[in-house]
Amino acid sequence: NNNNNNNNNNNSGGRSEPILSLLNNRQQTNSSSRIISSSNNGKLWEVCAASTIFGMAAGLSFTACDETKEKHQHPHNNLIIAEAGMDNDNDNAIVVDMDDLPEYTMKQVATNNGKEGKPIWVSYGGVVYDITNFIANHPGGSEHILMAAGSAIEPFWNIYRQHFSTDLPMLLMEKMMVGRLNEKDQQDIDDMMEVETQEENDPYAKEPVRHPALKVHSEQPMNAEVPAEMLTDNYLTPTELYYIRHHHPVPQLLDKKDVDNYRLEIDVFGNTLQLSLDDIQKLPKVEVTTTMQCSGNRRGDMNSVQRTSGTAWGQGAISTAKWGGVRLSDVLKMAGLEDALAAEENGFQHVRFQSLDGMKASIPISKANNVYGDCIIAYEMNGKPLPADHGFPVRGIVPGFSAVRNVKWISKIELSKEEAEGAWQRGLNYKTLPPAINDASQVNLKEMPSMTESSLFSGITHMQHVVDVVEAKEGEQVMMKAKGWAWAGGGRNIVRVDLTGDEGKNWSTARIIKGGDQKFGRAWAWVFWECDVPATVQSNGSVEVMSKSVDMAFNVQPENVAHTWNIRGLGNNSWYRKVQKVSNHNNDDDDDNTHT
Image (cartoon, rainbow, N blue to C red):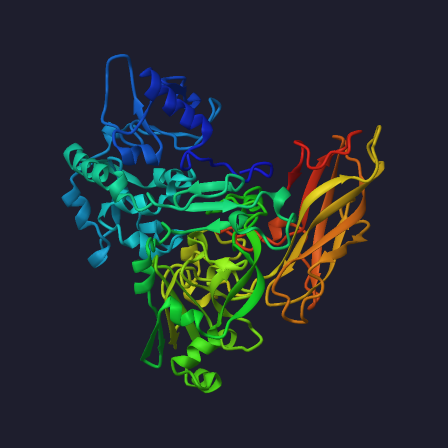
């Protein structure tokens, strides 16, 4: 995950191109595609496609081979290398002889389910793992991984296919191996998964069609960002280019009957109100324009400091739209919330959302019921009905908050004394740990707040020379025209964007060209800016321009990504840095560009 490539994955469902080509070669030619592990003294290892459809989705099996011997296929047969796109110079691989590990039956694995002080075991691809010490650090939350305690994880990874979009899960699991699974038991799992992964049973079989311009990080579930060069082409992001962040398959309301039967349930003090989509659309309509950003935006840059867990987003997991719907406060009032302040004083401090896909999150009642907070239940996006990818039939819009609080496909809203349960509110997913913490078991997650109101951010999307440069020497200055965006959470207006081309010795102030006229304290959307900034030519013939924004509270972005690093890769709001080669052509975003 380097600064030049925030999209390590592709349309292969998460496998890297080198790995995919090996698989395709083997399938098409029936030949032995091979890689060499330098850590194993040059011994040849056959790269085998897994024996089931599910195994193909997972990526690879590694099998020790000579010219005559075949072994049962599983992820780690004798050679433990799970790094997608590895090369022949990988000296960090762990080599283990699987035959030396004890064999366990599925019945034995099932007894190790974490109950009565027992360890927590799972199996995957013919290997048995002890995950006891990993539970607290599972990015998806402890309750999700505990569902698989004492069982095979293949059925769970068939839903949570983000495990296949990165090599991290297998790299972590290498250290947890305790044995190999009985071959007959693994065959039973393979047979079950072959049925589950047939198209008619595939939960991802009816996913919406996406725009080909999106930078896809994983297809199942879909996670895709807006290309940086397109971010500031339109103030309102075209709906088809709006970034996509999913945890599960998209819930499907496929026909009119499904839509007619849909009901939004609102629970206030135990009183339940149910509204159809038609009922909701008959209520007074309001519109709000707001920017929404994934909490992991620019996570890829954090990986340059130390690897994090999660999708390696560039700067494109952010978009802006005009949403149409009904005030959340109006819906709560219909269900019986007459006095929000009195309710809060009686302990009802949270409004919880539940999605059709099972995702749960909550926001403070002070935000939900604030007449100036502009929270709505939206059924329109940019003047048209919500598309499936963005929450049809209705979704929550919580301006100024992290995107995860803007719950899609809402099925239930509840006034509560407790915040939402689940990994997205209480788990590790959206909690920013201190930089020195690599193990979540070292902290009390219950005492750490989850991400709600967003911080302060900026990005550079375009950069070009103001005049042609015939020859530029190291230390000379060239004038660059930069364009980009800035946004602050909480409705805080952007008051200034500063840029430097000499590591902060001198600064130029950008011109706000769009979005600068938003209401004071209700600036829910980004601003676009442009700036002419002198930049110093470096020894490699490039210039580096950096941006930092300032909001109405005079918060300023921190200089270095190392200062904001955390194990989950959340909230990277360090100075945005863009590098460009200096040439005698007025090129915009040429191939030599990098950014952090």
